[in-house]
Image (cartoon, rainbow, N blue to C red; front, side):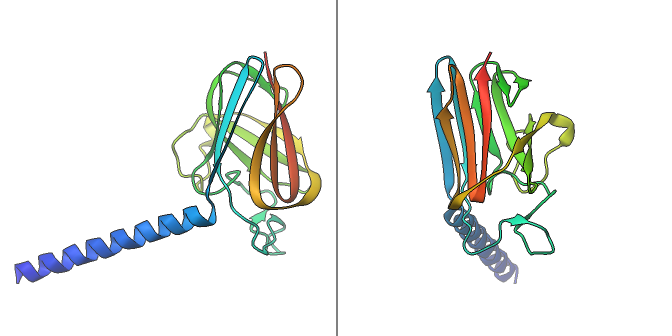
Length: 182
């Protein structure tokens, strides 16, 4: 009798493990990992994130309209794990002072601008809102409407001397965040 129970528990554990592996693979295949890295002068920056796709959905908008990411609600700036940025030197991030290091980036979308949060909490699954007490700051970035981009993309483009622009594109939204070495 005890042997049958152990076999049953073993099969149940294997089944749960297989389901977890499948769901993890499915999430990663629907929103594969992305990264960007760039050096401009004394500034080196890298960003890791996941890349969801539009897939005929309304991404940004009101909750009443059925938007996947409603205005005024936390967004991990991607999918799966948190979006993280690493910088090698002290910078100004959209005009705010920021020390060299690795940080979580998140957003709160709006129709005209996105609030971008820079947070020191790392290693957490991105779905959950960050500990806002660990925010270094939040900053407003204006929305530029652009061509429809099917898959969420973060690019790093050179600006002026020692400046890198973080360009976030998804659906018809485009953001550009200047980061300049001090």
